[in-house]
Image (cartoon, rainbow, N blue to C red):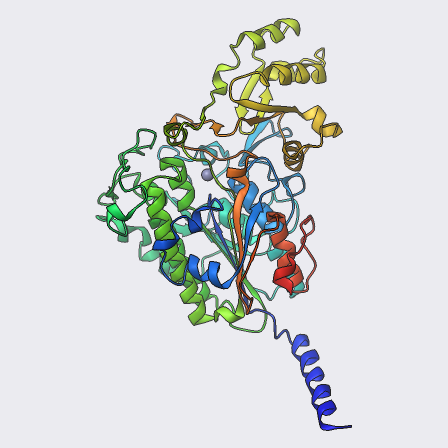
Length: 561
Ligand SMILES: [Zn+2]
């Protein structure tokens, strides 16, 4: 045997050996999700981004510029669970932030679970100060991932390593952390009531010392007597001349113009104000860094998983609109937060040893007022007025319905009343099709689809219908699925009027970034249309483990090359 052949044999043996020992795999998978980060936002203000944040990802990573969610109800839990599982909501079951449970007869919040209460006393949702109506709708204060019907990538990573991979999910929102940590990991989120990071008894019996120490410092209080100030000079901003717009929401005195004061920390809305500004992301950043160090993530040869979901962009989008001075500054501040996180991961684990993926649970529309100012049609829909509409009245007479026909519209589903459900003499399919026909004529409604049509699958093969089918779960979906016209949506959150709301199958809501970086990946830009269901199977293929149980995505070849 010559020398070259000997070297080859030795090298081959080394590689077989290395793979068997788990080397060559990343030490850490870092999944970053930015709530409501529409695909155009990371590069919209590129000239003013710093180094190491979006610029690192966009210049060193594999950037998919035409990535979309393929389901119709582009809401937080729906998108997060899709990112985590590679499955559509029709399989993972998270069809909306809320759904009506036909077995219990009550509205259900996606991650509520009466079996697992919060591990911190006084951390339950404060009904009086909570501005998120889906949180208020929960009947239980307990939380767990029990309603996620398939495995997540993080579950598969855990099971492939005999439970030795460490798996963590962190977010301001419970649903942003729980969905990504899956069934096997540990989720921590921010309690607005207690101002601390908390979990439930599903995950832990008691907090590790480092979490106790972190909370003992009262992390939120460092923002007391400070304000959300602009990062740069106001005149350098695209929206610098238009801070005070009439469609922006003043949440309990937080105001519509800079500086947005957090007050002295004594207001019951103090922690809420933090979450609807860059401070919320900074709290998550601090906790995620602590988790990385204290749990020794990425410290050994077994690949660990950390999900960090940043929520401020979502709240800012709802309250001020994505294209607002607040929205612009929030992106520039998020860029600094990302740079901080990536620098920390680099120092602890090394970006070369970390496979990073960044995406979003959904995009978001611009505020109708902003669009109208540019002569673009947009507006708000009011389903409350439908019950008394002449057309619905005619249907009620025809089916001799004495009480209400519509129980509620809980996005994106319309639900029939008990009077209808309990009345066996009503031909439900006939009623559904008549209501669908009338609703389709209402101002702001683009498409109405009956559950009978969804169950049977006899629908036109259009992009819009496919996205509604991807969202359909027979046990959890409502009676009629409604798609509003582009840029038309409900802005009334239980009395709180917001600037803009996502949740449609239109491009501004489905369009999100997908970027893979670190782990020696070569920079590349891809314009092929890809979907968010592709992320989880890509991670599985990369690590040579089986895809999550309901995954239907296609592994992205550029990442695997
Ligand atoms: Zn949202």
